[in-house]
Length: 448
Figure 1 (cartoon, rainbow, N blue to C red):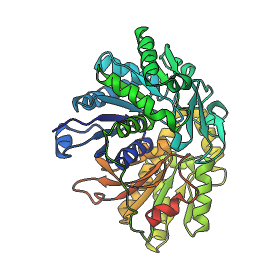
Figure 2 (figure 1 turned 60 degrees about the horizontal axis):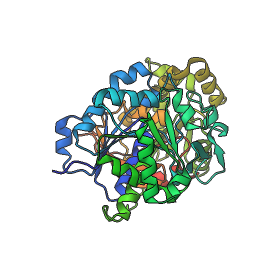
Figure 3 (figure 1 turned 180 degrees about the vertical axis):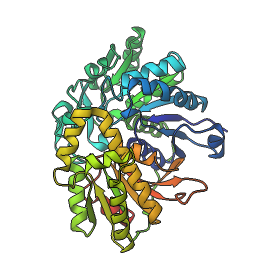
């Protein structure tokens, strides 16, 4: 059985499902494991073109990463994939003390040995671009473009605010002191010139090479340069799903990948349950759209739900109310930003208690989801919020996800693999706070 072409670790669940969707829609047989799979689980999956592990490192301290990442990296390396990918958020939000991308690379080198580290700085289909090493991101899909340190949401993220747009400086603060920029004009110079330029850069042994992505035209050239290095030694790529999109663009142009596949819409369901821990204005607009279409929105007190991680009763109350509405045929969204002052309260708690509050809140969302599913059998659910998705789904006995349908760029509907449990076959959407159009929750219920 041939090894997969690429193996990736996603540092949160929502981003991992975006990578899963992009690979599956490109005709690549892909399975995303929720946690480090056993060798038996990998063998049982059959032939795969890509294998992924959805993790929670985005919310981890460096010490926690030291404990969690080596086993994941070893298992991915065992797959025989020529390219390993540490999949981070497309906005690169991270910090030295939480979700450190530089520390993840250091662990990879310590665990796997020397490797070439290409950083793909953009993902055009999500409105993420890197120009002369500076990151730009739209405010919502199709929204206005901002330099990341001036982005209305990411510059004030409650846990990992982006205060620096130059990714070289941002990553230097996390331990990657020597990141060199392979800028757009270098990519535009042609294949031969670009290859020579990369070889000259690598001769100086930098920590990593950051590739600009100023538009879709740069995906295939970057993919070609990464693929060429994979034939010479270990490649440990860093970046969003732009890594896969670059490789796929190159493989397709070289006749080494099948044509894209059409993912059929799923059948509509009569009701869905969604838990939202996102404070993003994009998610707020989605909540308003769903409520105007008849969804019931239950306000959740973020302070009290955060206590649910330690056995608080607030989750039980919300779960009971949600279950009653679901039994009556309503679709329900439990939202931490819908409560009076909820967004301000959560932001204040996050500022005061950092990642610990965010982790407790996300875990409380998971307990809430778990309790609702225990009371009402559902075919389809959703989770909004990057950290929320990662820690909430970790509360469920789901071992892996396969791709079902793309509700939009960055919002994939997946099928849960939970053998021997009632959740086997559950359809679940995991989306980051910034992802999806205003009607994404309606699309979840409609199946596409």
